[in-house]
Length: 368
Image 1 (cartoon, rainbow, N blue to C red):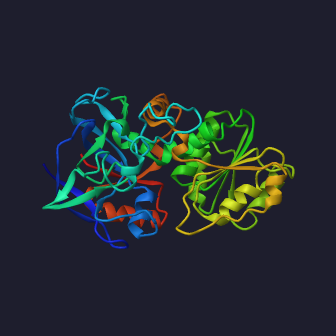
Image 2: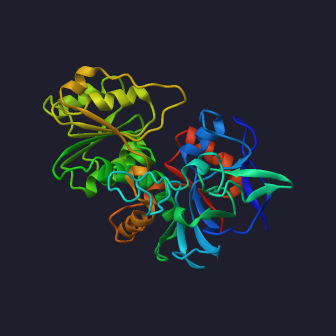
Image 3: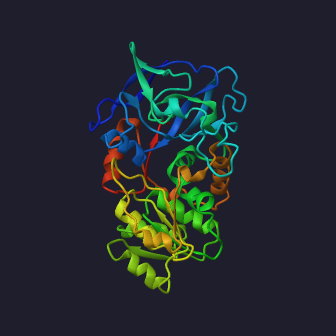
């Protein structure tokens, strides 16, 4: 079939919205008609050429939601008409990682996905005789996409898909970092560095876990105001004295849990140093640039602070994304506040421009 998609042709250049061919789903695969897709920083990161694992040509996009149109042979968990959220982090439920409660990093299709291919080592997108690679196993900057069954989460049809799509990446990453990775304890003190989509999700996760105090740190007053609406009890303007301010707020001890959601290694170091001596846990969810390293003074670790990373918030997508969507439907998560702009597919590059200008939290491409 012929579809329209946003193709990364050259790093550092705007995406090209064009007609491409999409083949039918093979065994274990599903054809999805996209309804909505968030424009995430990871898409911009790859398009810019900063991602060392990036490749072109490829159809970008990974924060999608849509409707199942056709299923390939052997697909058993999905039916035509199901509403789904795309998962760049799949869940086969069978590999050693999927069976472990300690990680969500599924091993089943990781090698091929990282190279831009579906599990059989081929692509479904093409232009003439030229194959076009998939991005993060999803490629949701397109009217339709073909994905592995294990990379789709079936969600309630009651959830608007232009809201549900945010659970495909940013929102789940932040919420999961607090709930799954850090396992925030009730009554604890939490500090979140960064009030973008991931950071605001972390604020939500801390609130859902019953944190007693949630401090959000950011340079933007408007984003800090959004953080207050999501449960932040205190807000601070970011800067070189952020750690000192947090220590003042916590009687000199620091926070039980800190979360870094900026991708800036200077801020990551602040998140480590703002964690409490003795048991403070710093969870890093931001993605730093190519070749950048994090400098930590060993004394902060020796005196009891810990540092961990969080990929997709430790969320096991097929099981937990539907649960998070149910929390949204129940009114426990205010997703509406995060959708700042509605765009058409032809405006995908404007989505990147809005992101770089820090205009709003999330631009959503509406395919309807």
